[in-house]
Length: 157
Image (cartoon, rainbow, N blue to C red; front, side):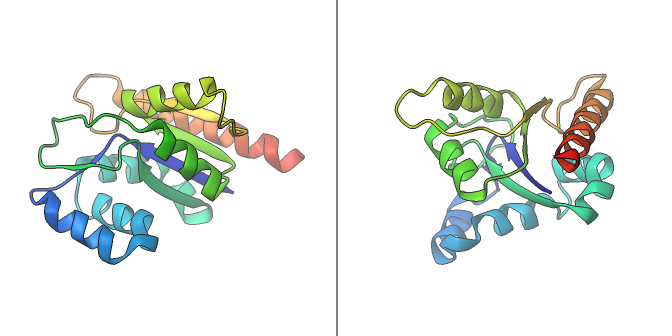
């Protein structure tokens, strides 16, 4: 099974360096995002803690709701619904996890689009993994349960 995980936006101390990396390797955007995500970030460590067992057996692809790279992890760059739509169309995932408010709003806009309609797979809305409020773990575990239910349902088809 293939899962597209959409986060808010990529951030780095030196955004120009990351933008240059994306420009140098345009076909590796998702691999770059994934490598940066799992090299010690709170977001990556929480995703791995909750979904790690599933990530071993299924293809998890990571992208952002915004194509912008920002220099402050507190800044939420504006989402780009067209980018999200194209990413979903390119990967054709079995499920999408929208981590945080920007990905949820982008998915909502993709659903409302009249011109460039696509068939959306099941979408699971989840808190952003780096959120600093009580209950984040349970919300992420609920998202994991929802993903397992989707997998079970798809295997019956």
